[in-house]
Image (cartoon, rainbow, N blue to C red; front, side):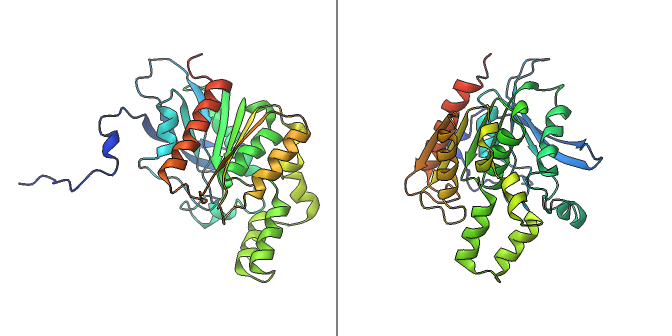
Length: 281
């Protein structure tokens, strides 16, 4: 009949939901590098309105977002936020030179790529009301933003994120051995894995600079990024008298594969954002 015959719905419970509109954009980083990104605006956004902005860096970091349904981006957009997903340098899929440009830049140009994205969408979102949210490496980016660029963000949320690069390297070394491919790859991504540089780009070592409230969420069965990463960050923030909420997801792994705990994570994020960056104001 020359028409498709659907076999099923991946998210049948969302069949009638109104989704945010996602568009593909590019912008210039401060050093001239062209940065691709996805921008999702809330459904039903009034003409000329500028909603608060969520910067949502992906994990990896040698990964990328895709032009498909993204449950986190759509969750945030349907709560009234504009969502920016920068494909910062080091992201996969944009050529070897672009990917290699991220080496040694976890706490450097990869972070300023995010800041430049905020400025690039200031005509569509409120650049003065921004929260940074991410998982895994994106969680590191969120914590790095809150501690290294506190003037840019009203709040930060890290899901299964990295807080201490030296600790991460040590944990990988203990698990895999110093001559393992995983340790070698991690050293290459971090650049010169010298203690001073690692500390200078480790959010857990920079908590005194944080001014925004921070949410930490971590599964207690995470074998990719140890729950100790969030424990260390929570302890350092509390010791410094900084605002922090820490949610432990019982029985959950790195990838939020269980529906109940994924929902628990989203509810914690929703409550946190409603308190610190309400979309209605």
